[in-house]
View 1 (cartoon, protein in one colour):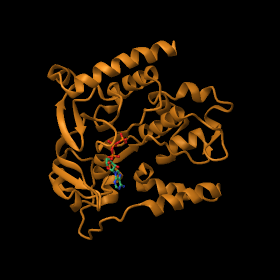
View 2 (cartoon, rainbow, N blue to C red):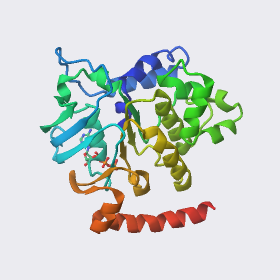
View 3 (cartoon, rainbow, N blue to C red):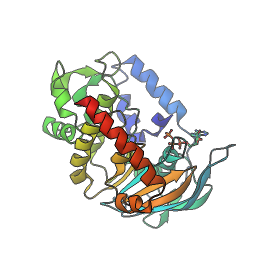
View 4 (tube, helix red, strand yellow):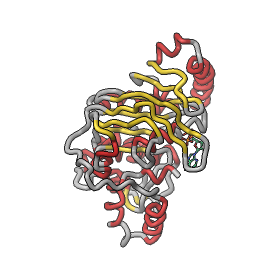
Length: 301
Ligand code: ATP
């Protein structure tokens, strides 16, 4: 279901792939059909520049006909900041992302972009500012390089490789039969979930978006490789806003602020150290998961 959040621009570029692959074409039609109804506002302001501040102000939301999923969520993001969102399955983490990407509107509360209500801003122009990486990476039939360059088709090979390095993908790509020219996606070489995720991350890195949204973007990558990617991303995050959703706490550890979401409510909020000091839900999860990470690393080595 998270595929529906692929930024709209992607569709335009994917259309070029239709001639190349009937299967891809079918997939695109499916994606387009899934897209929830959008809210059209003829007076919407086109966003000309990267936003300097995004705020969730007491945002609550329920899917139509369902119980409330998000209750009174408040946080803000500025360039250079990373906001992490953790919480058990079903807590509403992906729903927060869908609200940010405007697939749904809050029932109450507001999402503000540079102090303007989100709905007063042209949706396409907002989404152009966003690089979104989901757990479920979408690869079309084409070479690895073409897949990475999906959002930035004029990129040089060097820039593509640089993005792949940051995303922790360069090494395995160069080991593929034809390296960056290896065909992947439908009819191409089958890649593992973790490899597809890293290609998808490289794609976002190459686009260089002012707002980076990572929804379980490295969930299928082993903890060691992930630590490496986190290290690489640190410099990349520099001047952009990053919203990172994860089960694995180490993924969001470096965040300026981590929202601990339980049943749609932010029960704790702070950076890693302060959350540990609170000795609450986050600290408990951390104790459990760092034990697992040690076990995991032992099996890897
Ligand atoms: P996970 O970690 O398992 O991805 P999450 O924290 O991201 O979980 P959400 O995917 O945001 O949780 O889901 C929150 C709640 O909303 C769940 O109870 C889910 O069943 C429900 N939900 C999600 N998407 C929809 C939808 N399109 N329609 C109705 N209910 C939905």
